[in-house]
Length: 342
Image (cartoon, rainbow, N blue to C red; front, top):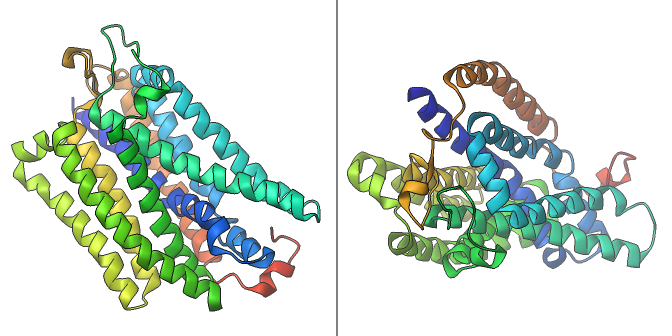
């Protein structure tokens, strides 16, 4: 039971790190057509995330791999019940990655505009759909006793699911705008900082509405009420969210981005803690729910995997820290002249 609990929270942590790292990429890609004025600024945005976006998506692969290896039943039900949503996300991610590479291959405004639209769609769709998917998991899915999903893609597009999608989108928009404020200079920097300031207010409203809706639509608060000390997590989440605004006012953009990162991680863990031990709760019958205990791999598999994680996750973290340090400077017009630039 201890192994299943450890892996449940490791599963949640990997998703949280993915949202934290790739979240600013989704935010930048969604802001891309609105915050830029010319091709030069668009190239600056792409190069602000260019050296990092593919490394950030390693965490998505890791989270998916852990789901497959540690909780194979959850993986099977996830990719059958959420198949349409997950395939849309996959195609959007592929489209986005291809767009970065192909956009500058032909010197044609029409060619660039087509790939610009793909960058936006490939960023907006995952940001929204990840939120829709997780909100529906929090709410509970129509899963029968055989683990078969009794619904369609449109079942997921319920008001609470769409509210979750909007929450994720706003989190990522603020996160992306803050990253741009760190990585750019001049007028583009000012626009990014102003965008983060304005979006923060919308994020605050959406977050409050989501928390209130979660009380009525989900059972996420049950674990917190049973163990009041757990309320420290949502309290820290509120402080991190307020910290974004405080550091923005102080023009401390990296601290604001770090506070945004903490907000995303704690927001994810609010849901993870509220779900425990459920991973895929059923709203048809609670007995049909998939939990960390009835859907896990054997104890031997979990032990071996834990050893692998202890060895390799620090290596991945060290690589990413090195990559972020290597590309920590601002992206300037001069950088666009390099052959390696997008």
